[in-house]
Length: 334
Image (cartoon, rainbow, N blue to C red; front, side):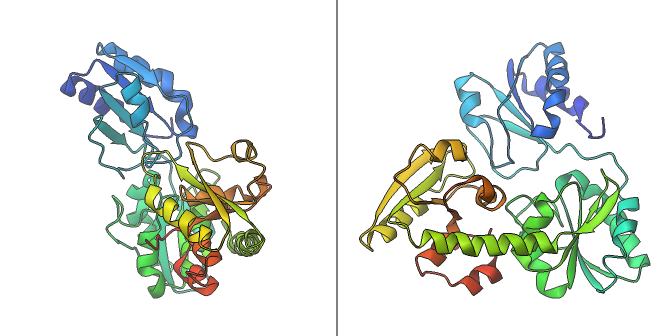
């Protein structure tokens, strides 16, 4: 197993709290270990239930599911704590990666050659490796800056929708190096900061740039806003996930849209997908007040514009396009 599942801590917490029913929540890449973790919990006399639903981040706590199942403890894997949940006790196990990052970082050095001052960011899975990455970059004659905005659990950490640590140092660096798997977080960093971003992927043992992808997404977002301007009927989506619920903001957007003599409908849902919103054919465009990554990463799957909250402010004339590009797609304006 390439991730540290903290199995001993899991058993210790279940025993210490004396709980009899536990819900284990795992991101997609760790679902396969659910039965093994359930066996561990059950050895200590507790009933273990593995959530088979998708889990999109620390904002997606299965609190309501836990309450309906009579669970006394939620064990949330793969993310650092974002929400302090009091209704059902919750522990976060970060699932740190047990892979070396240095070879991928070495392969990233040619991509970083044009710049001297580098911002260093990663996910919680590699946060323990930042010091050795910093040392490797210093030996390559780079100046390294790691942000600590205080919004997240760890210095230099980014999540799918929180790039405060990157934005905190964006003006002090020329480019960012993201250490981690896949393009998802690096694309977010590029959108949030406007700076060139290089990926050092230790799982695939390679490095590459994603600037062209970021620029393509920005062009797509402008096209979506332009298309949404033609809409008469707007759907304002309210996320039901515990960390994504923005009811008041959604109501304000609805009221602002209707001041122009047009119609808007509030729609509440847990998962935003083309299959769900296509059931409302009379709605011309949508505003997503929940996770902005759904609008940005899944745009090609939707047949109609699905704007983020900040893009809706551009649509309504409350923010101009240049400000959106400068502010980024993840910083709330409310």
